Image: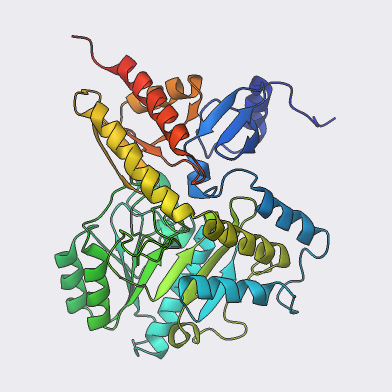
Length: 428
């Protein structure tokens, strides 16, 4: 007989270990409920969520407006496939294109699917518009990228854990260093068969690497000069996470005319996911202007679930919450507050090297080698103190709370983090 309920964290962990593939290494915390910035485990302990499902829960856990949209639509019509029209998709397409300033959207489900979709669009554009010879189109990518884990995407990954023993790998990608405009200029000038440059405005999984302020605008200018599409993967950085609606081109929903963001660098293809649904349903999208998106025609790409009525209704609600609650502005103001407060501790710390980030996408670098376990042990200690975070690349801890967090909660979390860090400081 199959279990229908979990009575303890140990039971849940044991079940996953026995019956699930071991493709993740979670912290030993079993979550059962979430609301706003908080989650609760099976035993009822409350935690601040400082990962936000890798920035999928920007609007907070179980946001009532988003969950109500899910409930209401699921009770009317869940799925038709794209063999027929539905009454929600057009409304969603109108909302998302006007929000981000593009002509067309191609709806998908997951972030990796959206990246794969952008690659397909860019290649077809390369052949049909730029007139690249058949099967010769190339896409430039950056070292230490993270765009998903499909076979094509890991083919241009520099992470051996993601890539090893999954070959043969897909060809057609050129890797250059991140935040290196001379390298981009050199490769674009040397190869006329390049269709696109795929880049994260901030490299999140690599440790929240923030490029130079002029990086994206310079990349935009080079792509325009060489007739190359700029693809911005904003699956993690988009939807207000970095203090602007988008990290790539500084679009913001707040009323601040002096909004501080990355200089204008509007991409040709914008890839979104995660917080596009507030974390309650898989929704992703690729946006472009007509001259790019029009290379897609019936039968050339699709998805049974992409653009389904639930996804459309949920995404509309999720975008409205970002606007109505001014989450971009909140992320910008509280992100600066968070970094400034942590920096005061780091100035005299020996265990933390630095804090970096933008908006409420931040990370600290622990004074340990990437193969060490200090960052993992710090995250375990943080969980015991009621705050959940996770290491990335060994010695980096990412901090990304839901954007609905308040100033008082930020201060409380800084107090928890610094208290835990102080226990790891080397003894004199």
